Length: 472
Image 1 (cartoon, rainbow, N blue to C red):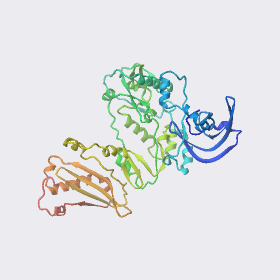
Image 2 (cartoon, rainbow, N blue to C red):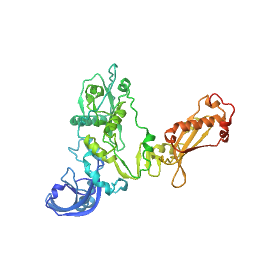
Image 3 (cartoon, rainbow, N blue to C red):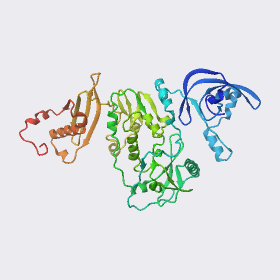
Image 4 (cartoon, rainbow, N blue to C red):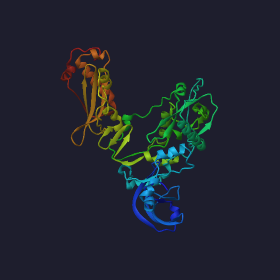
């Protein structure tokens, strides 16, 4: 018996039963995995001497049969629902050792339109269902790629464990045993060592983190560049439908070089352990992961096939398919516009009232409303509008759309140096133009564009008889 909204039965259990076709829909598991169901069966069974019949959806789960709330309501009535316990009651009973064993499986109908996969993409997702995992299967595949922790001639550093509450110690013990069973960590006796702490996730569970700050200070940084966000957004120009793939515990899918495993050691109340794969918190983890993505997805073709071929697993819950709007690199991207994600401007919208000059200064240059950006179209002409003040210069890059309106592509500003503040107005305006042209050269070079300024004296610049050294 569960808190599932309906009852479900494993396909192999219904070989001799008559099935009924139902309207196809999806259910969502507690881990966020969505499964498609389109058949139902009437199941007759005997429970404690009582014959019962219940309708159950056919669903591929690890359980033979799941009795849901529809069974509770039918045979126990509303009074039977009083035996349902909240997660707080369950946790309290476990702490008081009133429960010997608990199994939890939560299934609920998924009605959220935004989470549904377009029907025409369903066969593709089902074809590559093996790359979507709720949990990683174990150690990563040997892909000829390993994470290296280069500390040069630095001496090892080790820090003692942080003090933890009883609740955190219980969670630490549980997670350590789970990691040991999966073979992701090993007992260690390393001269290196970092402390462990817990961070509460959005769903209330606790994520174990290792504080590698001391180790990172000893590590030589990788200078491999990460992709520019603005270039990634620009490449989306003209796209109508978007798909995003999120790898499950992405860093944990990369191996650590054998000789560097001792450097990942972390100290706990229950001993010292080392990671056999890339943990979160190391300073070179982002460029290392980016290097793997460049290696695997360099040509950007047949992405799902390449993930399967390299045994890289995606988090189905966080993937989106065929959407007209997605969140990408902190922006909400659609065919019509590019906006900062709502959580990026929420802090500004909810800023407390300003009470003094210092608070006003802190608020300067913060965004009040999300600017609407368009992706550039290299086939259309551009417009650059600039302006200058006593303390800075600014510019916007525009492009005319099909609606004959000029749409914002990018904006740029720069604070003037002490020397720049001494320039006359004309030269500050010219500096604004120069800064804009240099910033957006990648768009403007080889394209048709115009520059607009509200300082009309600039049109006489070429007719000046004398130029300052800066202008020359």
